Image 1 (tube, rainbow, N blue to C red):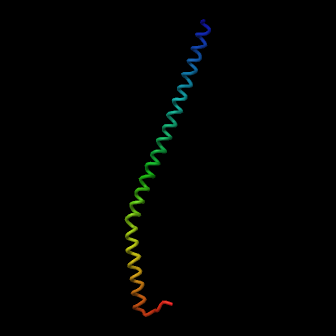
Image 2 (cartoon, rainbow, N blue to C red; image 1 turned 90 degrees about the vertical axis):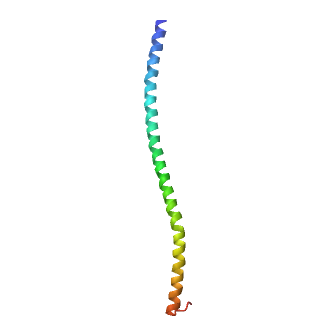
Length: 84
């Protein structure tokens, strides 16, 4: 009986060591996951910023294209160059 109790105590000590190792590994994985999540959140913020910049410049480029077409037409008429 004492032999059996000694084996169970040894197993219990081994399980405690393995549990501590597993807890440390879990904390390491959580730290790595938190770092990846922070990178993902910052990347999401960058993408939202770029989308906002794109929404701002799209109409601006349309207006600039219109004015450049008008300027090209005016320059062609003013200089008298006929298109081929």
